[in-house]
Length: 38
Image: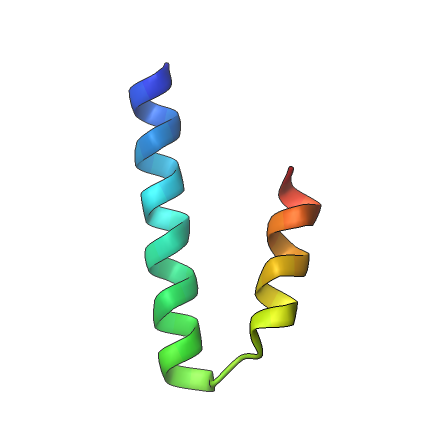
């Protein structure tokens, strides 16, 4: 279970990195999304 959570975390991280590179999303909104997920 831990490995699947770690894999999911990396997939989410990659998604955020691509989003920032493509759309120049402010870091504040990314942190807000992370706090909403937790």
